[in-house]
Length: 415
Image 1 (cartoon, rainbow, N blue to C red):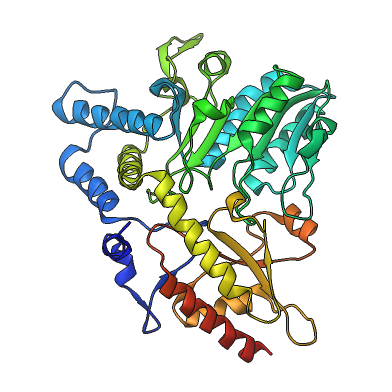
Image 2: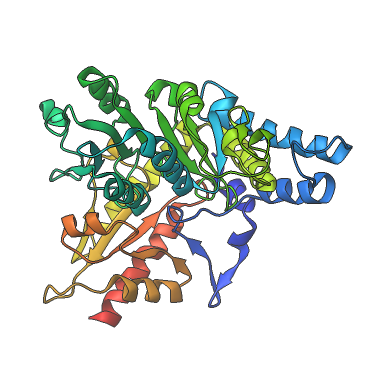
């Protein structure tokens, strides 16, 4: 991977922040967009803009073809096994809500159990909390061990399952710890325990960074989002097994998701359009397909290797900073390019993550600070907030060296 060439693909990296070159280390929140994605969206609006699946004129046919080709590209990118199993959503959050609403309200009842983990993003907690409150179901959580991994070894996973478990919803990769959960192994164990338990995997932090084959993982549901994988905002993906999509009721109703509407009743369109009501984000789907193509040109194994090299280098440098604590697995094979840390002063008092982030911002360095939409995890870690850096294909070691200098400056200012 030619990093200088890759960096030239991202127009925003030419920006200066407070007179200093932008160093963008907040890719886990949202990634920057390469010119290929920007141009794909621009061309769509300049040459093909029309509503899909509704017109017989040329532009409508072109827009529909681009939209469905995007679905095909995304299915190939994550090895979904079939285009019709890819549902375009607004983001991963909407995908989880769709499952909780359409599948959950039809299948979860009082006394049933919904199993999550302590490292989940709020998007994979709150919808299940609401479902549990409405139905009388119970939420359970798989705890973390001392190495920031799930306690599932040596048969521990079975301790959290029961005859009442109806669905397990877990993240593929933690947005705070960078932990890569062995979802394939977890799913295999769950299937052995009870093949009727459904499994949803939140892949928002996995799809942009590691090779993902949904067919190999064999989850019932898998969600991810465009804006974290170099694509545009406002578009995401829900994968679901065909038989489940056929059984589930629509999440949102209206135009395009119907076959026939009469005054008394309506019938639903075929999958996947049954779950894509109203005018869709066609330009977003086009941009997402361009982002997938951009990543596929590198090969996701090469993307992962590049980010692991950066992670190794960054952890080595950060570990040498006095009073800085790094969170997450020690084994680099079990994490992606997400590094969370906190700094204390000489008396042991925690420097507020927002203060650290503000000083780094003054140096042109963008990081994330706060609870990262993972407050239950913050409680487990015993902190209210945390600093986080996260890498993408365009980051390099020079940026990490500048980060280290900026952190030392922040320590002096905040001492």
